[in-house]
Image 1 (spheres, rainbow, N blue to C red):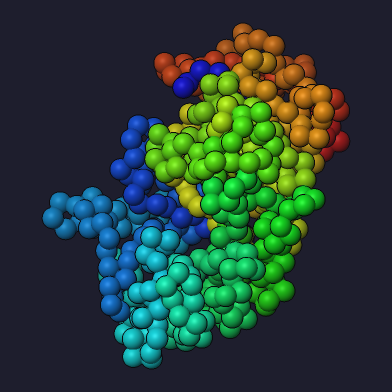
Image 2: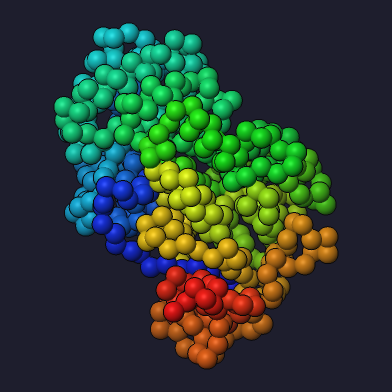
Length: 484
């Protein structure tokens, strides 16, 4: 798994930024159950870089009556020789005092029925809000994230739509009295969000709104589809793409500075009905096989996808209309986001003046750097949203270290022409002393240094496209006239 790699070459070192009032937010969810995953998927709070995110959200706690319920006392708490997840999570602020930490309640597995019951009358809402404040202060979080999935759906009642607003209103009052942050994770597409939310009203009471603009397609459908396409293509459902989601939320009255655009560090997978029919919209016969770490049919973490691509048997296609990649191998198919598509989404956030990005979730990024740099998805968000540098439109985004590693195709090409020129012919003799990408002397090309898994490094020579030169300031093949 540590051999030749297929990866995005844009390698950004962790950056330190001030927490100015106009700074874009990067909101990072942490799935605490990932500490139980096997092998290279096993995550620990100590792996979190506190400079990657402006806000970190610990998931999940649950609901019992009108009280917050700890779901994994051994992992979350210090009592009875527990692992003190809450404490260690919040201690990350000791390294970055500007970091804000929140704890989230709910999630998909919690359903909606309990929340509907809690929110149905004023007394319940008041008691819940008071209990939340006590919980947040007891465990030293900066705030609380409501992830009720979803009001008036999945066992909820129609009255939830108004009761949700009343709940947020009373929570806002209690939170203001205690100087706490209140956010929410919300359904993205019009078809779901319109059933659950009065958007102008909820926006009054929330500090920011995490729009879950992913899971727009998946194995619940009978054909392949991209998890989170940025734009629609001809024939697509016009509502099921990121652009349409953002347009809906803004048009319905969500202030753009409060809208935090969700991006996934995972893909949705399918098992194809026919290995020879592998385009977007191809017939399927169910979810893809579970990954070795997430162990959930129908999805793969970005880290799992990256490791699969190392083997060389997967074909990767970057869809020019939807601006996202997909990959297939035999009957297995995955639509996902990579560094290139995440950067485009971050540029989209900047262009529209949105409040920032949210990632679900940090433990399925390539946090160990098995396929190159550590945390490539988070680094990509930071590079675009928090250092003010715009990327060239022809970013070198998909590169294979050997021609036989993987076939990278342009979907619009009938002749299977590679998406990029052949970027490498052999391993380089360059002597690496650190991981990363470095200019090749007297050339526009560059050298990539990769951990060889034995305490040393392998080096590979890459060629930039015509009229591009490697720019070490932002670690991409950039237009020559952008460089000093």
